[in-house]
Every structure is written in C-alpha cells, then in structure tokens.
Length: 285
Image (tube, rainbow, N blue to C red; front, top):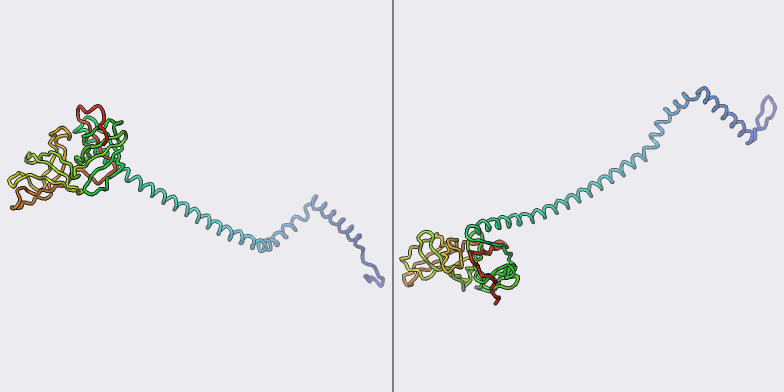
C-alpha cells in the first residue's frame, strides 16, 4: 500500500503493470522509428558497454588463442615429421641411384672396350659365385638361348676375366683366369716375350711359370693376350707383373702377377664374339 495525501492507494496489479509497460514500450518504439530519438542513447550505451563486452569475451578469445596455438604447433610437428620421413625416403632412393650410376658407367666402359676387340658383345649379370676353395668360377644369366658357347671369351672394361666352360639354356658357367686349372697364352707388352699365365686359386693373383733368369721380363710389365688358339682377342690386358723372385736354387723365376680385370667388382661381365663363332651353344656338363 502507498500513502498519498493521507489516502492509502494500493499497488497496481501485475496485469496493470504489464499493460502500462507494454504501452510505454510501443510508444517509445514508434517515437524512435519516426524520429530516431533513441539512436544517440543507444550509441552512448554501446560505447559504455564495449569494455564490458571485451572483458566478457576475453576468456573465450584467450581460450581460442591457446587452442589455436597448440593445434598449430601439433600440425607443425606432424608436418615436420612427414617432411623428415620424406627426406629419409629420398635419401634412401638416392643411395640406390649411386650404385646404378656406377654400374652403368662400368657397363659403358666394357662396351667401349669390347667394340675394339669383338664383332659382337652382350652384357651378362652374375647370378652365382663359387665358394669352393681354389676354384674361381661364376655363373652368368646368359646361355645357349642367347648364343653363348663353350670356350667363349669373357672380359670387362679392364682386361680378360676368363672363358665359358659350361653352357645351359639360360645360364653359363665361367672359369676365371685366377682358377687353379686355367691358363692363357700372353705376350709381354714391352718386350714381346711369349709366356703362359696360370691361375693360382687365389682371388687376386696369377703366376707366370717356366721363365728362366735371362727372360726379358720386369716388375710392372703388362701382359696381354697373344690371341694364339683363337679363344681370346689378341692384345687385350690380362695381368701386370707385381713380383719376380730369382732363387739360384730354382731353375725358373717365381713370377707373380695381378689380373688386369676387376674380377671381384661389379655385377656384370661381357661375353664377346670374334668373327665366326659356333652356331649352336656348347653342352652343359
């Protein structure tokens, strides 16, 4: 109850308040719509409320910033890990390319050398190397189907490697010049001295027997194939003399030589044809 001039007036009912406030709101909206009287007031209130809005939105803004920071950091970490993995993969591929480049270089050298001493040549990949002691043989992935025959010369870009001793359809066995049972006639490239080079069974040495102390041979002399017998092309490097021992108690010099061919390197050899060759491949043993 409200006491006005000694008279008690009851408070308006809730319905009356609602009606009056609604009417006031409608009237203010109409006035604002027509005369824009409240626009300045709203602008002022917005200015006053802006700091409050900033303060109210600060936690959400900070939260988004923290979330973006960790998200971006995590994304960068993932991208960095992917780039590192790709780099390792590329480096691994690069390591594979280098041996291929070296193999191609050796093959080109062999083909250039073969063109000087043969009418035809094909490259053959090694598929097996004998592990028997004092036996120096390899198996290559070419056979009678490719025209390979028993007795065929095998070379690389540096010298004579050996000859084919067994032939099958798709593979052949090659006896290297270091095999204990192999011999090849040679000439001393400096003096013209004829000799024989025998295998020793060791992977990197051959011997030159049956030469006396008065033979014209020196350490460092290059021994080349003589071409006698027609098996090997004449004038192709076979070995270089590395040691000569003249024992007065022995009838012959002990001469050791090192093969010119790189017998223990690479995965390919070169099979060559010189002039007329057998029309059918040799039989395997």
